[in-house]
Length: 118
Image (tube, rainbow, N blue to C red):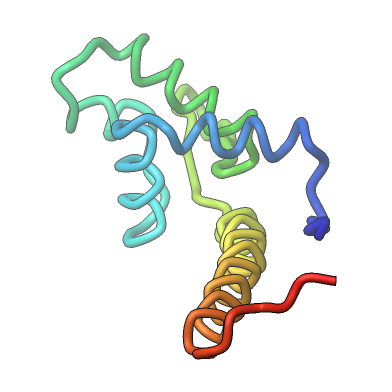
């Protein structure tokens, strides 16, 4: 069974590659839970260089999970909940496939008669 997504394979690869890192997941979580923040504000929360946080944000932006806008000298980062919803929808479809398969397996295992061969 093929699961369709509104995202291309390349977009999905970028999305899940971006979410594969704990720091990037934390940045997305902070932005989803709060207000948009400058890259400087985000960088102050991590024990890494400003440049490293900038690279994390750039990867999140490339994946469509956040967007940046210039406000004077600052770059304000905001989350993109729609992209998270797209990833969630795809994962939900995949989960439904596995639930269906396990249900079929349960049915087979619950049948006391072995299947007949033709």
